[in-house]
Length: 89
Image 1 (tube, rainbow, N blue to C red):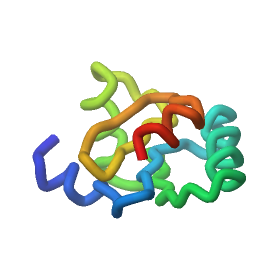
Image 2 (image 1 turned 90 degrees about the vertical axis):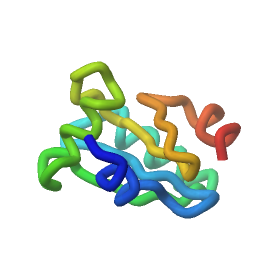
Image 3 (image 1 turned 120 degrees about the vertical axis):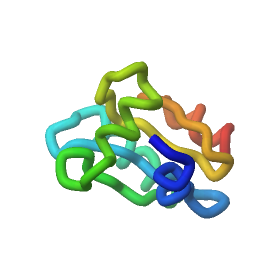
């Protein structure tokens, strides 16, 4: 991972970038919660977007764990609760 790769996914203030897969139940649940709380997000499917899986691995000790969220400050959280997302925004 290079800083340029991460910069491609750093979201605007008040939103997150959410790395997902099509089959992830935790991803679907968190998306519903973020929708209900009016939190904007950009969804990036790591199975479809080249390089996205490697970025998720860099945040998760080599594991492709989703959902992984990137916040406007460039930090990340893996499988956070909606309360944690709201606090960080």
